[in-house]
Length: 386
Image (cartoon, rainbow, N blue to C red):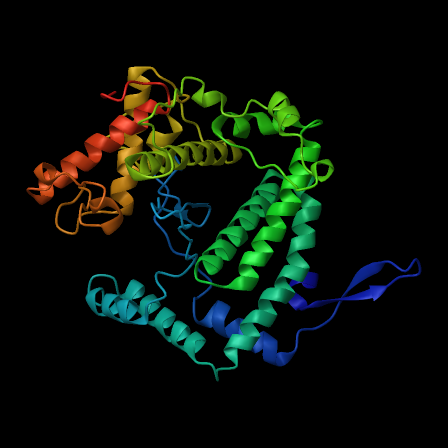
C-alpha cells in the first residue's frame, strides 16, 4: 500500500533498456487537489441503492451499475458517485431533503460546489483533476492488467472501464467532438481486426455474444486483399443464431419506426440479462430461490430469470414484460407512476393515425401494442401478438 498511497510513478530505464516503475512523491499541490475533490468533497463514499436480498439491487450500487435504455441510441452514461451535474437541481434537492435526510442534503450541496468549480475556467482544480486522473491511471491500469489473468474481479473491472470509456467517447462524438470520433474509429478498427484474427482460436469465447448479435463487424476495403473474408467468419461463429426464426417481410422494420425501437429494446434486454448473470456468477449470488414475479421484482431479478430468446409464446411474453419495464423506466410518465410517457417526441411521432391520437391514453396504448407486435417478430413470432 505504501507504493500506492505515496504518489505518482515515473519511468526509468533499467540495465536492459526496459522501462521500470519507480515510486516518487506526489507534489504537495497535486496531493492537495486529490484530497480536495476525492476526500473533502465526497467524504470518501459512494451513493446508490443498497442491494436487495439477492444482491442484485438496481445496478446503482458501487459494485452493480447499469445505464438506462435510450431510443436515440446514445449511451446512457453512468454518473458514478454524482447525483447530478446540474447545480440547480442539487441545490433544490438539498432544500427538499434538509429535514428528511440531512446527510443527503449535505452531500448535494458539496457536489453542487464541486461542479461549480469545474465550470470555472480559472479554477486550478480543473488542471489538478486531469493530472490526478492520468497519474492514478498510470499506477492502477498496469497493476489491474497484471491481476486480470488470475482475478475475475480485476478482469471485470478492466472490461467495465473499457466499455465506459468507449461510451463516454461516443457521447462526446455525438456532441460534435471530432477528436473523440477519430479515437472511437481507431478503437473500432483495431478491435475489429484483432477480434476477427482471434476468432479462429477463441470461437468458443465469442459464440455466446455472436449468437445474440444479428450482425458482426468486419473490415472491408476497396482493395479486396486488405479486407476480411466475412463468409469465413460466418462459418466460424454462430452469428444471429438466436434469431434463426426471424423471417423479414416487406413490412419488417429494424432501422426505423416501431421496428427500430423494438429492436433496440430487444438488444438492451439481452445485454441486461447477460450483465446480471455475469454479476451473479462473479459474486456467487444464489438465484435458486427466485421465482418470476413482475409485480414485486426489480428489473435485474426479472432479467436474470429470462430464458433464451425464442418463438415460444410464454418466452416472448416474459421478454416483452422486461422490455416494457425498461421502456417505462427510461421514459416514465410524470403523473402516472408505472406508465409510459407518451409525450416524448421520439415516441409520440410514431403514432400517426388520427384515430389513434384522440387522447394521451390512446396514444400510449397504441405505442405499446405496436411495439409488442414488432418485438415478437424478431423471434419468428406472428406480428399479430405474442
